Image (cartoon, rainbow, N blue to C red; front, side):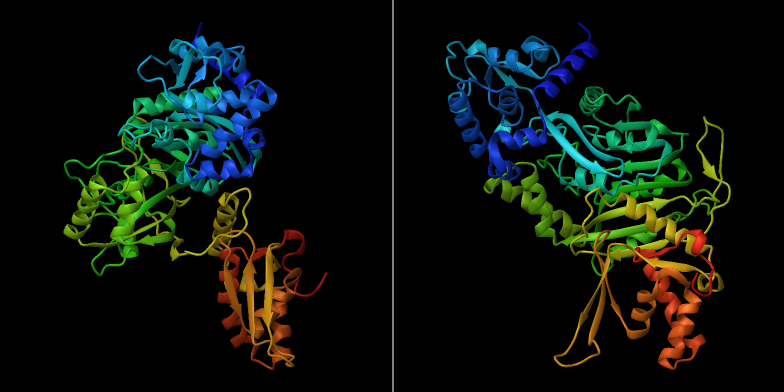
Length: 564
């Protein structure tokens, strides 16, 4: 039987078993669900055991959850019942399970509700983690099944260095950032289990996914086929090596950016460690991106960057965005860049985070690794580590040259119109479908402004975004507010302080009047010089447009100096 047939049968069985995120929550409850997110499986085990006792049988979804999420062995007969089309034998053939021998028969079997099992070879244990995954993006709600290597919870020991990670916090962050703009070709660098490539397949006609791990590529291909996704091509290799001479409209990467000491005895996990010193891998992605983007193409990635001694990390990021010494100014186009730092950690905090991530618990090994991290940071003068989002874009007038079999270059590098580096450590706004659409809207607003002088802006009608609210504070008994603030409900959840003039302008932006007409009316109301007031307000208006507080009204209402 071919693997395609086996995968098709597995897909049919998982759907028939209602093996889904809401289905599992219904089986073991909200509290057990929350405990699993904390890497604690006891509440889920107890809930499934109680359910089996009540029903006097094992539900198919419960059997699959015990096996693939909790890591417990299950009777072969139960798996045959849970996967009637594939069968336990088919699951073995796909490499999902194996028979438990007499030596490694886990004591958890009895606790998990495997009743009536007398022979060890009647038990099957998992070889992979297989779980449902649900999401909402700009295209709507979706759900998939994702296969990855067994985690620390199921293994009972630290992860191996070749571990293929499932869907973690970073994966969810990047997929939520992914701009949903339809494109012809997308590239996922360091695909891992394939989750970013799968998300990209929803807005790209063709996706190329690369990785240095053969195992990762195998699991990613399995995940794509299991979920009926057939527009992804998987290639082996590091960074841009598998796509030399090719260009893409959208590049996505959750690269192995974790800064790891290059010291003996320190594990080097393929899913998070790129094998370079410090933050050099993220720099390599940034520096190599321009040669693989179509004009107007975008790169989105997550990354770490180091603060060295008294040097601000943003200075280093600016350096990554410029040609290196000796590099021709026309050899690599200058990229538009929007970089957002979300978090900064001390060397100790950073070390603790990633030592725990590998499954090492406090003790002699933890202390040894801790020292290795701190020694590395101290030697290289690293005093802090930042984490955040990088969005880079090749300007639309930077035309590529070169034949398909040549290394592409850019004929004339243009000055970027967007160079925005900012720190946003606060909570984000409410974005049930992710931040991607907001980022795309902000880029569009930037591009519109880059082509719009102040004279045209004054003739433009604007509208307050639907998620924006205004907060006012008053002293008791006073009519005039002492503090006025605009709040953004979605996007980055920004807040902007208002003065009387800006509050009046924003309040009048309902699409009926042009900006110039509003400023003229405010000048009369405030007894102010109109030209001076315009010079004061227009830069603020541009900021509000760039951040999504204000939007350009449809053409039918744009340009009127007075009301319709």
